[in-house]
Image 1 (cartoon, one colour):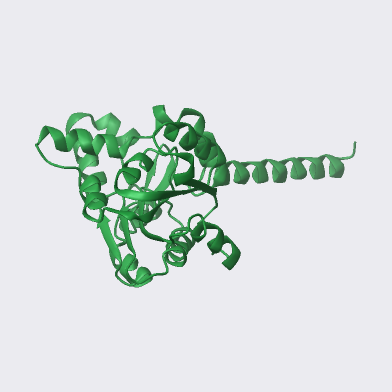
Image 2 (image 1 turned 90 degrees about the vertical axis):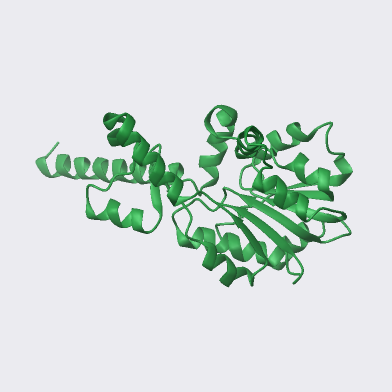
Length: 265
């Protein structure tokens, strides 16, 4: 093989390796379907149950979980409720206690399978509809919106969206907000968001520094270069090397949704 042929072969191999690396990075991004399909295989071990954690923590202080309080506040057994990004269905039984019929939407089919299993025996099949949609990739078209809104005779007027708006790409969470608005297109609708808090992330970083400087370097929020420092200013922090968006979205919520929002951080 000539030197030129060898060089071309090496260059082709290098391009293929770079493309593979980009694909792996894309699949690892928390806004992709493949990421959540993989997460479904070990969801209980890897993902914190924010509802159970909130209920347990608040109970120790003789308080009610803010998420439970928000859902209870708008209880109406004649209404349909939606869980945008329902995952394995941990919040669906809570919604079912306070609303008539429930719709769950998620990006991952395996997670929806877990949601179906989680609600078997607790929510009658005729009162639960699960839909597989990627709300972040693009805006839903009218037939897709109608599929969701037509799940039951009563169109949805209440929703929750918990720890879904965590991807760093503005396009993704912007599309999610637009799609939520399309589904809940009635002025009297209410949507409750639960979003990660930047203050909490910074507090954890400070605890790391006090307790274990090595852990702070390995697991904390990097600010060693201009890019990572700018990410922090924009509310983007890494978790297990995957960029996540934390709070700072409340103004945008009101801008996108016209004020029908309760925001828990």
